[in-house]
Amino acid sequence: MLDAGRRSQPVSQLRVCAVDPGLTRCGIAVVDIAANRRAQLVDVTVVGSPGTDPIGERLSVIDTTMDSWLDKYQPDHLAIERMFAQNNTPTIIGTAQASGVAIAAGARRNVPTALLTPSEVKAAVTGSGSADKKQVTSMVMRILGIHTAPKPADAADAIAIAIAHAWRGGLFGRGLDTGKLTSRSAASKFSSARPETNLTPAQKLWLAAERRAR
Image 1 (cartoon, rainbow, N blue to C red):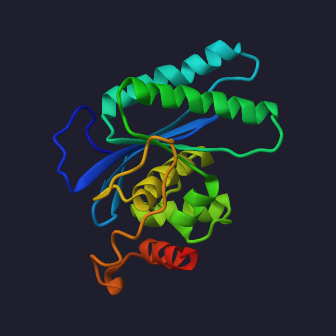
Image 2 (cartoon, rainbow, N blue to C red):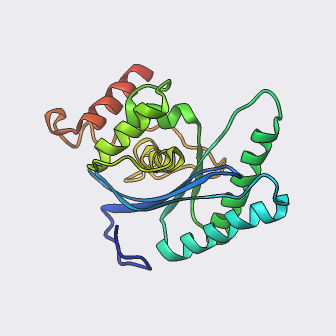
Image 3 (cartoon, rainbow, N blue to C red):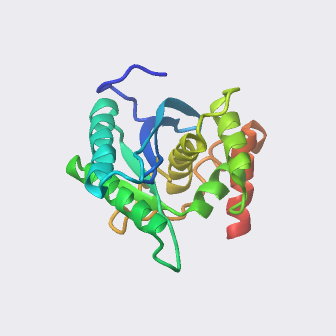
Protein backbone atom coordinates (compact mmCIF):
# COMPACT_ATOMS: atom_id res chain seq x y z
CA MET A 1 0.00 0.00 0.00
CA LEU A 2 1.06 3.58 -0.58
CA ASP A 3 1.13 6.44 1.88
CA ALA A 4 -2.20 8.20 2.17
CA GLY A 5 -2.95 11.85 1.94
CA ARG A 6 -2.56 14.55 -0.68
CA ARG A 7 0.43 13.84 -2.87
CA SER A 8 2.46 15.43 -5.60
CA GLN A 9 1.68 13.11 -8.50
CA PRO A 10 3.44 13.14 -11.87
CA VAL A 11 1.37 13.71 -14.97
CA SER A 12 2.33 10.24 -16.19
CA GLN A 13 0.28 8.66 -13.40
CA LEU A 14 -3.34 9.05 -12.41
CA ARG A 15 -5.22 7.86 -9.37
CA VAL A 16 -8.65 6.28 -9.80
CA CYS A 17 -11.14 5.56 -7.03
CA ALA A 18 -13.66 2.92 -8.08
CA VAL A 19 -16.88 1.72 -6.51
CA ASP A 20 -18.70 -1.59 -6.88
CA PRO A 21 -21.99 -0.33 -5.39
CA GLY A 22 -24.24 -2.20 -3.01
CA LEU A 23 -25.93 -1.68 0.34
CA THR A 24 -24.82 -4.93 1.97
CA ARG A 25 -21.41 -5.05 0.31
CA CYS A 26 -19.95 -1.95 -1.35
CA GLY A 27 -16.45 -2.41 -2.72
CA ILE A 28 -14.21 0.67 -2.86
CA ALA A 29 -10.73 0.63 -4.39
CA VAL A 30 -8.03 3.17 -5.12
CA VAL A 31 -5.56 2.30 -7.88
CA ASP A 32 -2.68 4.27 -9.41
CA ILE A 33 -2.48 3.83 -13.18
CA ALA A 34 0.67 4.74 -15.09
CA ALA A 35 0.71 5.95 -18.69
CA ASN A 36 2.08 2.56 -19.75
CA ARG A 37 -1.03 0.95 -18.19
CA ARG A 38 0.80 -0.49 -15.23
CA ALA A 39 -1.46 -0.56 -12.19
CA GLN A 40 -0.61 -0.38 -8.49
CA LEU A 41 -3.14 -0.97 -5.74
CA VAL A 42 -3.25 1.81 -3.16
CA ASP A 43 -6.04 0.54 -0.93
CA VAL A 44 -9.28 -1.45 -1.08
CA THR A 45 -12.14 -2.08 1.32
CA VAL A 46 -15.68 -3.44 1.43
CA VAL A 47 -18.27 -1.67 3.57
CA GLY A 48 -21.96 -2.24 4.12
CA SER A 49 -24.72 -2.85 6.61
CA PRO A 50 -27.38 -5.46 7.45
CA GLY A 51 -30.63 -5.40 5.52
CA THR A 52 -32.50 -4.89 8.78
CA ASP A 53 -31.00 -1.42 9.27
CA PRO A 54 -33.00 1.66 8.17
CA ILE A 55 -32.21 2.71 4.61
CA GLY A 56 -30.96 6.11 5.74
CA GLU A 57 -28.41 4.53 8.06
CA ARG A 58 -27.31 2.10 5.34
CA LEU A 59 -26.68 4.88 2.87
CA SER A 60 -24.95 6.94 5.54
CA VAL A 61 -22.36 4.19 6.01
CA ILE A 62 -21.41 4.41 2.32
CA ASP A 63 -21.56 8.21 2.28
CA THR A 64 -19.27 8.53 5.30
CA THR A 65 -16.79 6.05 3.85
CA MET A 66 -16.75 7.78 0.47
CA ASP A 67 -16.15 11.15 2.11
CA SER A 68 -13.28 9.71 4.12
CA TRP A 69 -11.64 7.93 1.20
CA LEU A 70 -11.96 10.80 -1.28
CA ASP A 71 -10.43 13.19 1.23
CA LYS A 72 -7.72 10.72 2.22
CA TYR A 73 -6.58 9.56 -1.22
CA GLN A 74 -7.39 12.59 -3.42
CA PRO A 75 -8.24 10.60 -6.60
CA ASP A 76 -8.08 12.17 -10.04
CA HIS A 77 -11.10 10.21 -11.28
CA LEU A 78 -14.04 8.30 -9.83
CA ALA A 79 -15.47 5.22 -11.59
CA ILE A 80 -18.66 3.43 -10.59
CA GLU A 81 -20.21 0.26 -11.97
CA ARG A 82 -23.54 0.89 -13.66
CA MET A 83 -26.25 -1.77 -13.34
CA PHE A 84 -28.90 -2.72 -15.87
CA ALA A 85 -32.16 -4.48 -14.97
CA GLN A 86 -35.56 -4.98 -16.56
CA ASN A 87 -37.29 -5.22 -13.20
CA ASN A 88 -36.92 -2.83 -10.26
CA THR A 89 -36.06 -5.48 -7.73
CA PRO A 90 -35.05 -4.42 -4.20
CA THR A 91 -31.45 -5.41 -4.93
CA ILE A 92 -31.24 -3.23 -8.02
CA ILE A 93 -32.91 -0.32 -6.25
CA GLY A 94 -30.42 -0.59 -3.40
CA THR A 95 -27.52 -0.71 -5.84
CA ALA A 96 -28.81 2.41 -7.58
CA GLN A 97 -29.15 4.19 -4.24
CA ALA A 98 -25.58 3.28 -3.28
CA SER A 99 -24.37 4.51 -6.68
CA GLY A 100 -26.11 7.83 -6.15
CA VAL A 101 -24.38 8.33 -2.83
CA ALA A 102 -20.98 7.66 -4.41
CA ILE A 103 -21.70 9.97 -7.34
CA ALA A 104 -22.77 12.76 -4.99
CA ALA A 105 -19.62 12.34 -2.91
CA GLY A 106 -17.50 12.79 -6.02
CA ALA A 107 -19.55 15.76 -7.20
CA ARG A 108 -19.00 17.58 -3.91
CA ARG A 109 -15.28 17.48 -4.66
CA ASN A 110 -15.52 18.06 -8.43
CA VAL A 111 -13.95 14.67 -9.12
CA PRO A 112 -14.63 13.60 -12.75
CA THR A 113 -16.97 10.63 -12.57
CA ALA A 114 -17.91 7.90 -15.04
CA LEU A 115 -20.18 4.86 -15.01
CA LEU A 116 -19.08 1.58 -16.57
CA THR A 117 -21.23 -1.43 -17.35
CA PRO A 118 -20.20 -4.86 -16.01
CA SER A 119 -19.43 -6.05 -19.54
CA GLU A 120 -17.11 -3.08 -20.13
CA VAL A 121 -15.22 -3.91 -16.96
CA LYS A 122 -14.93 -7.61 -17.80
CA ALA A 123 -13.79 -6.90 -21.35
CA ALA A 124 -11.15 -4.45 -20.16
CA VAL A 125 -9.43 -6.77 -17.70
CA THR A 126 -10.01 -10.18 -19.32
CA GLY A 127 -10.70 -9.53 -23.01
CA SER A 128 -14.19 -11.02 -22.71
CA GLY A 129 -17.37 -9.19 -21.73
CA SER A 130 -18.87 -12.46 -20.46
CA ALA A 131 -16.05 -13.44 -18.08
CA ASP A 132 -17.04 -14.76 -14.66
CA LYS A 133 -15.93 -13.43 -11.29
CA LYS A 134 -13.14 -15.99 -10.99
CA GLN A 135 -11.65 -14.91 -14.30
CA VAL A 136 -11.89 -11.23 -13.36
CA THR A 137 -10.20 -11.86 -10.02
CA SER A 138 -7.44 -13.89 -11.67
CA MET A 139 -6.68 -11.14 -14.18
CA VAL A 140 -6.77 -8.45 -11.48
CA MET A 141 -4.11 -10.42 -9.61
CA ARG A 142 -1.96 -10.70 -12.75
CA ILE A 143 -2.33 -7.01 -13.60
CA LEU A 144 -1.37 -5.94 -10.09
CA GLY A 145 1.34 -8.57 -9.74
CA ILE A 146 -0.10 -9.96 -6.51
CA HIS A 147 -0.36 -13.60 -5.43
CA THR A 148 -3.31 -13.43 -3.05
CA ALA A 149 -6.81 -12.69 -4.32
CA PRO A 150 -8.47 -9.59 -2.82
CA LYS A 151 -11.28 -10.63 -0.49
CA PRO A 152 -14.23 -10.66 -0.68
CA ALA A 153 -15.14 -10.74 -4.38
CA ASP A 154 -16.50 -7.20 -4.24
CA ALA A 155 -12.96 -5.96 -3.51
CA ALA A 156 -11.58 -7.47 -6.71
CA ASP A 157 -14.55 -6.11 -8.65
CA ALA A 158 -13.86 -2.57 -7.43
CA ILE A 159 -10.20 -2.87 -8.46
CA ALA A 160 -11.27 -4.13 -11.89
CA ILE A 161 -13.56 -1.11 -12.33
CA ALA A 162 -10.65 1.25 -11.63
CA ILE A 163 -8.42 -0.52 -14.14
CA ALA A 164 -11.15 -0.66 -16.78
CA HIS A 165 -11.89 3.03 -16.41
CA ALA A 166 -8.27 4.02 -16.93
CA TRP A 167 -7.67 1.64 -19.82
CA ARG A 168 -10.91 2.21 -21.72
CA GLY A 169 -11.37 5.89 -21.00
CA GLY A 170 -8.11 7.10 -22.52
CA LEU A 171 -7.22 9.10 -19.42
CA PHE A 172 -3.76 9.93 -20.72
CA GLY A 173 -4.41 12.33 -23.58
CA ARG A 174 -8.02 12.96 -24.52
CA GLY A 175 -9.61 12.55 -21.10
CA LEU A 176 -13.23 11.55 -20.57
CA ASP A 177 -16.63 12.86 -21.48
CA THR A 178 -18.03 12.98 -17.96
CA GLY A 179 -21.11 15.01 -18.80
CA LYS A 180 -23.24 11.91 -19.25
CA LEU A 181 -21.50 9.97 -16.47
CA THR A 182 -20.58 7.18 -18.85
CA SER A 183 -17.26 5.98 -20.11
CA ARG A 184 -16.63 6.24 -23.81
CA SER A 185 -14.81 3.93 -26.13
CA ALA A 186 -11.43 5.29 -27.11
CA ALA A 187 -8.63 4.10 -29.33
CA SER A 188 -5.96 2.16 -27.51
CA LYS A 189 -3.39 4.46 -25.96
CA PHE A 190 -0.72 1.79 -25.73
CA SER A 191 -1.02 0.00 -29.07
CA SER A 192 0.95 2.64 -30.96
CA ALA A 193 3.11 3.80 -28.09
CA ARG A 194 4.70 0.46 -27.28
CA PRO A 195 5.66 -2.58 -29.38
CA GLU A 196 3.08 -5.33 -28.90
CA THR A 197 5.83 -7.69 -27.82
CA ASN A 198 6.34 -5.52 -24.73
CA LEU A 199 2.71 -5.55 -23.63
CA THR A 200 1.60 -7.42 -20.54
CA PRO A 201 -0.78 -10.38 -21.07
CA ALA A 202 -3.71 -8.26 -19.86
CA GLN A 203 -2.80 -5.46 -22.25
CA LYS A 204 -2.62 -7.88 -25.18
CA LEU A 205 -6.07 -9.21 -24.29
CA TRP A 206 -7.51 -5.70 -24.13
CA LEU A 207 -5.92 -4.72 -27.42
CA ALA A 208 -7.42 -7.81 -29.06
CA ALA A 209 -10.82 -6.96 -27.59
CA GLU A 210 -10.58 -3.41 -28.94
CA ARG A 211 -9.82 -4.74 -32.42
CA ARG A 212 -12.76 -7.15 -32.33
CA ALA A 213 -15.08 -4.29 -31.32
CA ARG A 214 -14.12 -2.09 -34.28
